Amino acid sequence: MSAASIKDSDGNLWIGTEGGGLSRFKDGNWSNYTTREGLTSDMIRSIYEDREGNLWIGTDTGGLNRLRDGKWVAYSTQEGLSHDLVWSVYEDREGNLWVGTNAGLNRLHNGRWNHYTTKQGLSNDTVNSITQDRQGNLWIGTEGGVNRLKDGKWKIYTTKNGLNDNTVRMMYEDSQGYLWIASGVGLNRLKDDSWRSYTTRDGLSSNYAGPIHEDRQGNLWIGTAGGGLNRLSSGKWSTYTTNDGLSSDMRSLCMRTTKATSGLQQMVD
Image 1 (cartoon, rainbow, N blue to C red):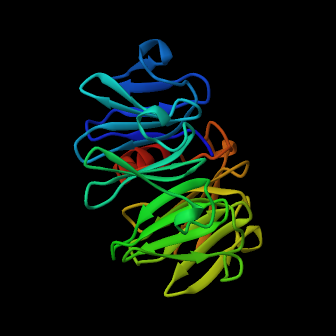
Image 2 (spheres, rainbow, N blue to C red):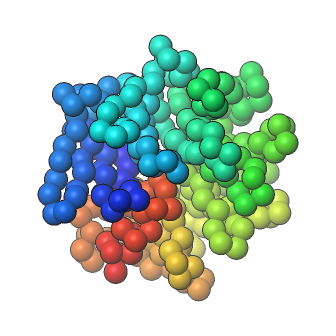
């Protein structure tokens, strides 16, 4: 998975790197945060801002970090996290924090950690992506397919159900209720147990799909590895690469929250 970037509620742009820690762009100036400033690792895998303005940073080997009022708080296996490699962070509507690691799914509720692994019904313990749909169901993307948690029960979707690959990189529900699932061999769309797959044969620039986001006009943006940025608008695909001004064609769209919408529009438009 790629490093992450978000635009927070105060308008700051945060960028996670793979080895250089966390960078913040504010009022035209850059500030850098590394292990010297309190981060537990300089390998940043995910960034998320919760509704209270806390910034959560998932790292490669240092567990989960929380930045609040200028102070770092670290959560690792010593504090109850199941693994110190954090791939994804998500806050649900009830205020629970869900954390995907290399050793299953973690939930932080009222200051206590709960763990979910294959023993509790997950299809795989490597959790790359987490999202919640409009019905309140929790969707977990793993290295072994998609898992849905509904009313305390798990349902698993794999290639046997229509998924084009069991390695799930990213998930996103659009405004029409379609769940988009990025995998290592393309893009999937799911609604009411009906599947559709998109690959380079359909217009994607690369089958290694990653971050997904819908803009205010209803266009879907998909970042890829090596193929730049893809836009699906009114059923037609467009591709943006370094030839169009992007700085890199590797996973060009790096988002973890919808609060980055304006940042995406500024970068693309």
